[in-house]
Image (cartoon, rainbow, N blue to C red):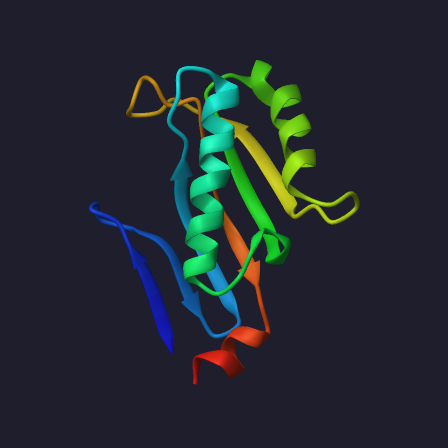
Length: 120
């Protein structure tokens, strides 16, 4: 069974399919990088709950930063949301965003083998 978490745009914030949850674009709102990344994780946790999973099931993320100088701050914030030695595989890049106020975006994949048995 495929479950989609819709957005008002032309993409889903997540799609669960079998034992996997494919996490679409998530971005935070706020004036500073700290505000945006914490807001991003708040929304990401909400999306994952809608897919019957959580941050600890994320196996891979891609983080897109507007400014590479924000990488050390991002590293510290990941420590707030993931247990030591339980981090997802990650790729971090820099990019320009359509929205000038956007400082970062994240997308990824979660694995939750319990999804198949609880969805049927």
